[in-house]
Image 1 (tube, rainbow over the protein chains, first blue to last red):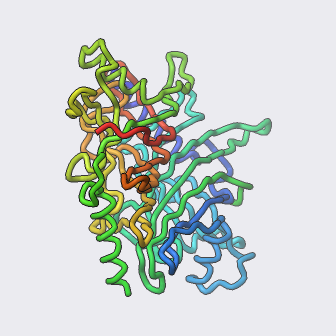
Image 2 (cartoon, each protein chain N blue to C red; image 1 turned 90 degrees about the vertical axis):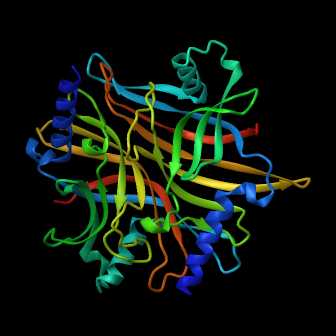
Image 3 (spheres, rainbow over the protein chains, first blue to last red; image 1 turned 60 degrees about the horizontal axis):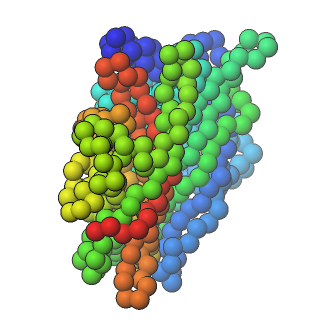
Length: 200
Length: 197
């Protein structure tokens, strides 16, 4: 019984992590985020500043020397980092090319680490805790080999009347940023995320 | 500047992590939790069941064959062990830790590249703690790696010369399948209540 359940869980993780196997037409969706970045101000108090997906995109745009932000998008990329999991990427709007990865949502259902998602039998709903990874240093990210935060993630898959499989992902996420470069102080970001329109 | 920042973080971790060193008398506070445990039911549907701190406490009492739950408490234990804070089941009479429910570890571990945000007065801190469970119950399982996390806020409040910690946040952790039980994912908000020890 136990091994069967684990096999089912593994199958679900594979299918839900790589939903393109279902014939899904989209695997990149606008990433919508609204939250707060906490830091210690010069007078020594913790202060929170609102941040959104736009804030994150601008920060990566500066690093990539892209001044026209209308040419790039921040997207949730289903199975963007195989075999580890999904990613949040900055992409070219024209080609869909991934220019950089903002976050990796990795190892949330990785059995060698003892982590298992909860998935319904129809494999249309999954809940899990995803450790967050950063791969570049910006105002809001810090390149690091270990996870720097967590996302409490809920994924749902729904077929429309045309037979297209649509992905819905939302949750709460939080990550920290170690001081580096021109960033003098630590930063902790927390907020809610969801997906917008499909892009590619 | 960077080194100064690192030293400030280390100092903050030592002070906020070791409140006892500041003269605070209490290290164990009532742990208040309200959330949902998600699992897949026999019909294959994902269902959420409300859980609270009392759910966790009663489960531990059942496993320990302790019928008088009122003799126990579930507490947020500041510096519960060398790795960080813990959520413990304790004896109300003596404060003795009977079992650890959750470990909140490595949230501001510079060696792992993780940092907290702390105010200059070192009375407020925000950080991400990684949740560890090192034994089996309905809502925990013995695992070497982290199984969830907590988005934690800690404040020290001094009233009439007495300093108390106010800790709150949102936490989520997973429970791997065991026996005939499928996986469970718990998520909810927590805070600290009255100081106990």
